[in-house]
Amino acid sequence: MANQWRGVLREYADRLNISDATPIITLGEGGTPLIPAPALSARTGARVYVKFEGMNPTGSFKDRGMTMAISKAVEHGAKAVICASTGNTSASAAAYAAHAGITAAVLVPEGKIAMGKLSQAIAHNAELLQVQGNFDDCLDIARDLANNYPVHLVNSVNPDRIEGQKTAAFEVVEVLGDAPDIHIVPVGNAGNYTAYSRGYSEDLAAGRTTKMPRMFGFQAAGSAPLVLGKVVKNPETIASAIRIGNPASWELALAAREATDGYFGAISDEKILEAHRILSAEVGIFVEPASAISVAGLLERSAAGQIPKDSIVVLTVTGHGLKDPQWALRTADGSDITPTVVPVDTAEIAGVLGLSKA
Ligand SMILES: *Cc1c(COP(=O)(O)O)cnc(C)c1O
Image (cartoon, rainbow, N blue to C red):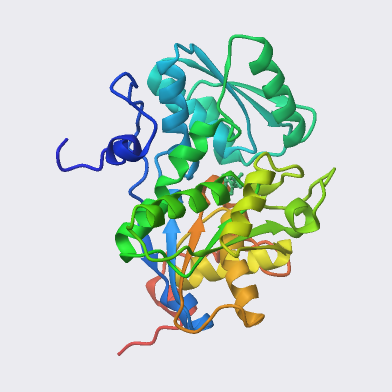
């Protein structure tokens, strides 16, 4: 295994709270590509890179925190874990629990999670229950169960999750040789926003970087408690991974914004889908809608004159497009896209493609 990326716990063992007693439950998460995005650089005048977290084993950044949370749970003797999820946490918890040989129970809001994520959790043999409420209700119940029954909570309120997730910042620094000027992430529970801020601040303290990036976080307009400064009772957005009205890491995120001279903004669903199309059609990266909000946020801040020319900007795109692919099959005005059907006829197909013989 010497020439293979070993997962974030082994790669960053000296920077995480683990010991020889910690079993390493890994699927090889982390080590995701930081991809230059010339099309976004051209649109903004900044030097834009995309950290593609859809390349993790279950297709989202949640795996970074889950390897840590499940490893620590097993270290402490847990036989079962529980989480509330908008989808990706359940997929990740289910996969890592299966790998560890323990049980994962997951609570998801009924009818509100993307098909790909539901399929993953079921494939990995989770006890999946659809709760007749929203994500925030699911998290309340998961906490209740963990407090009163022998089951270990692996939501991002579990500090091991944020610890594991901070490794993404370490990877960015290793590639760029310093911190970026600005780092943009989608925000739901704000655990990832908090994790990047922590990773960068540890790198700065250790002398691996010369500065802190400004941390920009974006929420969907119908689900933007951090922007509004109050809980949103019935959060709504097509970006299901960030449909959260009462972020679990609210206080930590406010502190991180303060410490990094950061920013929280809200983006309409329409702009999220527009950014989704730009990222897939111009950069070649396919993400789920929540992830595209990083691109939408960059374009919004650029239009507002808040992205300095030639500054180095990293966008985290959090989850893979194959999890929730339906959004690619509709146009900006909402009509369905149906591929053209053609007969088995070279000349006719050439005509449809607009080709003429050389
Ligand atoms: C979980 C998730 C988010 C939100 O991350 P938080 O840490 O809850 O802010 C964003 N995008 C995707 C794809 C996710 O799975």
